[in-house]
Image 1 (cartoon, protein in one colour):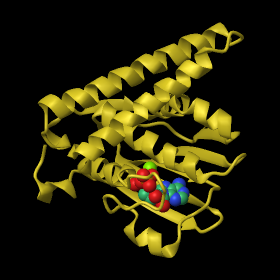
Image 2 (spheres, rainbow, N blue to C red):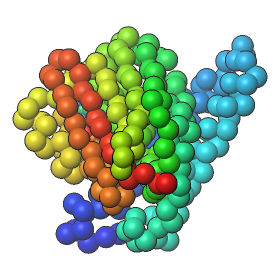
Image 3 (cartoon, helix red, strand yellow):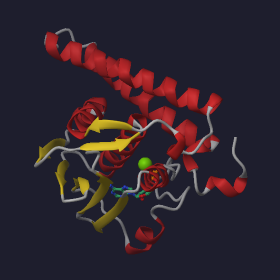
Length: 224
Ligand code: ADP
Ligand code: MG
């Protein structure tokens, strides 16, 4: 495990960071198994949910391998060229059960597609953490919109919800490791997102109005 002074730079490499990140795929697999238990589920959905569940287990395994064998910073890990549309669709599927239970309307708009250049597992971590926060912020029947677009140099992913919003005071501390306003929060998700995105030479910004909703905008250098 890393030294104290590195904790703020690489929160995902702390014990609580690892535990947090491994909880996400476990939660996803649990939700997918619940969906698979429906005897009326159409065969194509059954196949899709099974595939995503296996991928999520592989992701948990890879995170554990990183913890046991590899503490190197992301810049030394294998970069992959990842199709953003596939990654967004997978993140949405992995949260489908929680989204259905809460009655949330989730939609994705692919204005353009792009390939991102970073380790695939890290892109999943970013998308899942932002989606998870959006789901947690929404009340029953809330809505979340993911929009994918690009400009000359960056691929852009916006995740917008009409949930509780963020106070001006909380906005200042949002990306600080271990800052949380939730009863059972860890305050590690956004700091992990920031660390991964900055390591990939991208940036993350947030716009929020208390009581109205929040938008996170992630910019990643184009992979081609
Ligand atoms: P945690 O979810 O464990 O609290 P995070 O680092 O993921 O930790 O988030 C930190 C804090 O940022 C949350 O406790 C919450 O106050 C705020 N936050 C993050 N995303 C949203 C969102 N979409 N809507 C409202 N608040 C949010
Ligand atoms: Mg969170």
